[in-house]
Length: 317
Image 1 (cartoon, rainbow, N blue to C red):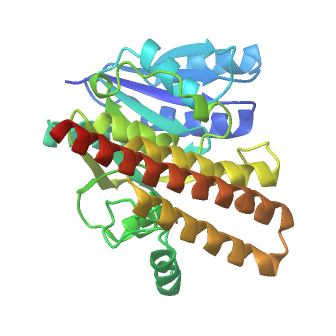
Image 2: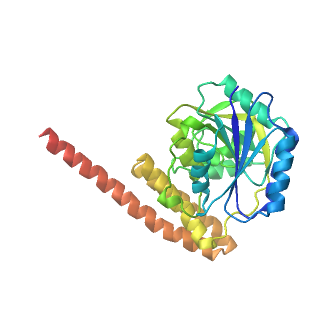
Image 3: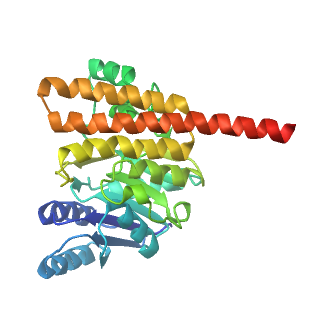
């Protein structure tokens, strides 16, 4: 049977982490599956808490591992996990989730059912959208018509319809709180300059990396509870700015062309209009800064395409 590494990337959230580990220990290791759990720590966890985790996980048949990072950042925690983990499968969980008792067993059975899968993800309980919310997300290019595809602007809003799924389906992306990969599919991860601080989109980049090795699937039976504790300590303006900027980098990495940038421009305009009635001036300022960056990137994309066309003509001549 495949072996399993569980990775909890955390920073100074002892209560959340303890609740998460409690739920994992209650379920225990899958039968006949060698299982380890890594805590990748960007903060300061008390020694007596770590000792309690080790005892608790040991009783559940799970080997406890711990690594304290010097350089903080979620993407760097993913990179370090891939360096350290020994399991055939790496399961990334947010430190503020709770697992049902059958989760780990169901995950490993899904990999047996889909032997060519590069990754398998799940769903966060309660994540859903109303009919009108879905219409707004479609019109603002925050989601696509297909539940397993990103929108034109590279957004992952389609996951808000995952709760309607009755069976496992193919996907282009995972939700970062609940995703797993074959270790071989993400081997060789490296630091990314634009993911040094606010890490929105890191799950999309990780999914894109894994897809080079095989298909990704969402199993609706892998549903967990996500408490969504506050994660970002950056100011609001910087957060909204980076939400857009990171998607610019993702579009550029995919070479999506002017259509992707134009769609992201429209999505960002929608975000500004949504924040205006709330008078969230800091968020609006961040989005406005991002609009300028999108416009600049779109011009670069158009210019780059025209330059390539000219070079092709010269070569042909």
